[in-house]
Image 1 (cartoon, rainbow over the protein chains, first blue to last red):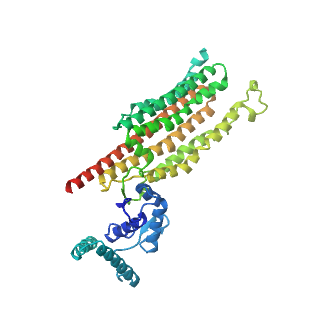
Image 2: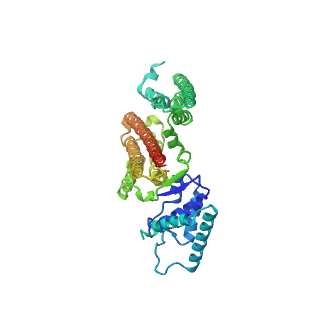
Image 3: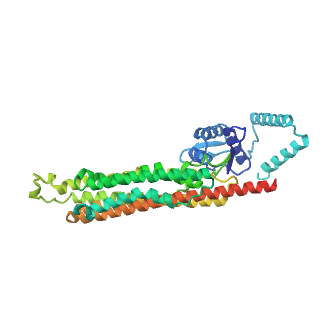
Length: 129
Length: 311
């Protein structure tokens, strides 16, 4: 299942990308799994076709999805790669974590609270892989 | 009214049209009113008044044409086609009234976007892969679509009788030959069914199935059962029953033209029955979707209730 919130300040496109990334990271979507057609997902979520198409395209560009003739859009990313992450991915992830931590500090989170959230998310993602 | 109006072949199409004209009012009237607010009840009353007035106008037109039809053939033909007034009555008046009476019907008619709240959840199952129509069924549909035109075409291999009374100069001008040619051409449109039917079935599979916030399996199963019934019902009705029965009647007309009036009556009754069955099926499916929308609302409400309790 994939959920989005229309009340969230995060753009729907970003929620879709993050949601699908999360499902892949949690192992709920595995390599070879087919995603629903753009039209189906857009209809189910009641959002614009182009938003879903753009999210699929961005994840395809990021190497997580691929369009296969006769099968539609499928997941090609595996949760664990034998070679580990590439240097540029490492940089991107680090920048993302730094930005999230900065936002948390500005919002008034304590160090302990952020550590608890981080540990919870790490447990969620790594326990299944 | 003259006796001519009371003969079966005149009366049946008129009663058929009358039934179609009255149906939206009767159906919309029978649906229970679930509007709870006074303003909503007023809205229902207003829409009911509009539907009653529109139906009365349609009845006046129908009655006028039926009466004029006893003297003018064009009016009789127009009266037979007055069932077409069903469409504006249904889509213009009855459906808005149904939506006002029951919010679940409104959700079914307007899709998910207006009713799903701010949190939207979707299943990631590709429903195109869950098409219950398998290969042998398409073979059956191809046979059903092709059998009629083939049976009619085979009649062309035999000679057509020359009736001196018809004034035809050659076989190609004989009434039976002309009827054969027309029915052959019309029946050859049946295989076109196989071009658009897969698209229609795909559209059904792609239809919005908004989930409750928790994405419960109960709702998924309800959708899956309903989707399967809709796809199979549409396939058997439009892919098999309609082309097979049309082809059979046309073939009987060209092979046994002496019994033409009997085939006409059987064809008319069969067509009306198929039409009624199709309409009943459509309404049943819409009602089921409305029920699923209600279940989704209940599941979301239960989840909100649980959240409030926890808070």
